[in-house]
Image (spheres, rainbow over the protein chains, first blue to last red):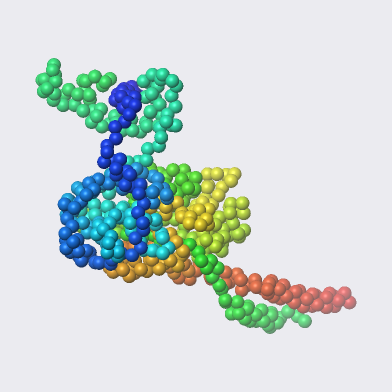
Length: 239
Length: 304
């Protein structure tokens, strides 16, 4: 218990400056990506049914390569998905990085709209929107399109996460309502309040290297010759 | 008249011929499947075993949270069944299929009530607590249920569960097809809403069946050429397509005849127009009448 309390006190002290800061800095490209994710584009009804090999040739013929990737970073969220359920945070997708790794735009941009004026590489949500549209029964929804595309590729390549939390942050509920603390609560009360729900995490933490690390410490004054110095053996907090 | 062996066989022959006559005329068993019902297609090749359907199901139906909700590995070590705390569960099967790295490829299979078109449980229920709704859902009405659990015996998929731990108000527990949600316009069951890969496809049964056949046709070699539930036990609302044989993912091989057909034919032909009780009591009455006459006669004789 004492170990847990000290750990959470540490966490609390670490978070303190962040909480007290009046204005939180926001990454500009993150804000831009979020804004883009909020857009709903008109539904593309008809697409050009090229087979995959053709598609790749088409893209090469059109002179589209990785150099043309304008958007480096996406947030894969959409009001179309949010309308049905809101379970996880949207995935942060490094578009340019994936383009560079695959070096083949047709992996994801597998079809194009029939309209010749449309972009060659249109966005996923132009064709994949709401699930189970009776007019387009075999057109899968946006959420399914993302998951099938990402997971299948990750599986086939043997690279990249295939579990939920590998890509998503869990949708964290607003802790303002959950945390119940008196005014001017002392650190012990705060820790006890955290542990009220997060006791498993605290237990897990006690079995990790964050709590049990030990080893040689050649650069620590006074402990240069110790070979088993560390939190797991002699250092402070370990009582 | 004395009841001789001969007269007894006469009566029985007459009764027997009536039975045969009635039975042949009453063989017109008709399916009670609703015409424009909903259906759901499970594409086992798309399921990734995230178990979000279990979580959504428990939230929507107010059930306890699923066992180790975020676990996607050790939970699969034992095979689970839907029970009184979970309407649906996902199991993992290794069927000998290998992935691109020669590692065994798991197949995940979701289990829930199949909502049969002609459900055995509906037929077996003696108080009408289970009914086939026009949405396609096999609907359970707890206020009518007397707890006989015939439905549990009748179900070919062994789905209905019972709250044995509740001695006062036990209920039969099984998937509701999210009846309250789907009867509203545009409503979708909880599990289907959350499925990340659209392994579950919801829609009118006809549409869904067409999608299933389209998928089988457009991906040659990927699927087993069979839609499980299209014809099994006369058709079910939940249907499966798979890349591995269905019996390997614990979907039993079942006949195409609807389960209630035989039992209902026998029952209905026996009791139509109450002919069988009438015939029975007629035979008994005749036997009594003849034997009484005989007894009266012998009594009178004895009285002399």
